[in-house]
Image 1 (cartoon, rainbow, N blue to C red):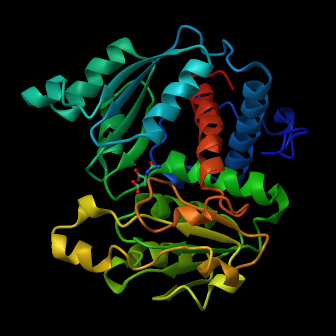
Image 2: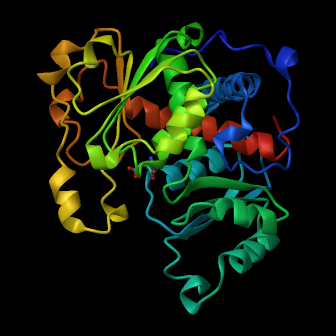
Image 3: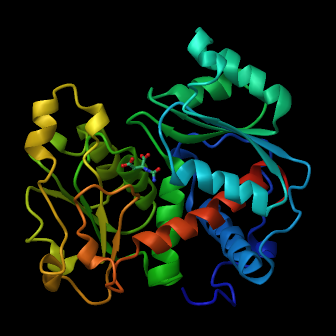
Length: 327
Ligand code: NCD
């Protein structure tokens, strides 16, 4: 990654937004363009600080509860790393197997317990709307780390930050973004499409018929004047694509395993397939991948998915500092 200075984002003084102190982060619907500029400006600073000094004491003495009812590698460990790089500490509750949830404790009671000990709670839960329910019950900020097939707002923020950092801050207006794979159950694409609709982009959706982007979402985005088109194959749109956002078929959301088997390998990105794409585009993936991107493509400079994970650390550092009143 290139070294990040000087900041291409607005200087903090011009765009200082202190209103995030104590707030929940539940949906990308909470953000407007100036909020994004602000968050990415802070994230860019965090990147510089991590590269220069690694760990620093902005959130010294603060405690994060990481409450995960679904599996996670990147989201949980990047929030842990983010908190620890800012000098704070973490109560990890992974997969709730060893917690009182197994004794039948409700989400609300669990959240009310954790907020007695922590200053902020990161929550991943299989039910859509769960983060909002938790936020209504809690006094401390709740950060939604994925609510079923609903939203994954911090992922969408890091995804957009990746586009800014990789392709340039000024260029998002005018880009063509193609989302590929499981657009029905993939919460990351739901959040990202909403967030992108704040810009003048064109969005293509490529998926098997049974995994198309939900109608309501397409209508919501169309109402903002964003051109969108749906396809069953990638070849028509790959040559015009600036950002190819690949997703995993979400096996765990299928009721019928045979249906999953039928669609799981619908698309595979290989060096051969990518010959038809531009040279200055990027390929993203929230990860984990299964088969949808061949490892043979990993060394291509357009493969941005490993860099994308690192950008996630800086965005999550920024969000924690903001909701805890330190940015
Ligand atoms: C995604 C998720 O959990 O929605 N993973 C992540 O947070 N990076 C994508 C996925 O599981 O496919």
